[in-house]
Image (cartoon, rainbow, N blue to C red; front, side, top):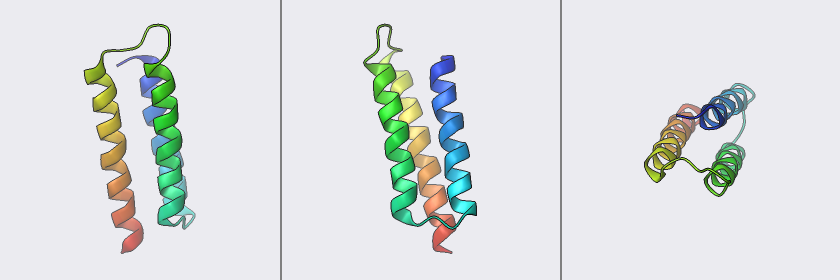
Length: 75
């Protein structure tokens, strides 16, 4: 995984955890996800994009972590 993709995932995780800790609602957490997807899309459309499999892996990781955060705030 490229450094850009790692940065997207790490930034997303940090923002998501901060959101959960600060009492963010579902809409706020989904906004964090959307911003991560926007950054991922920018990398995909950049001059030397990674393979699609890697893009989908990162998108899947973002989705899984969002679902875990949503479960955490619902409890």
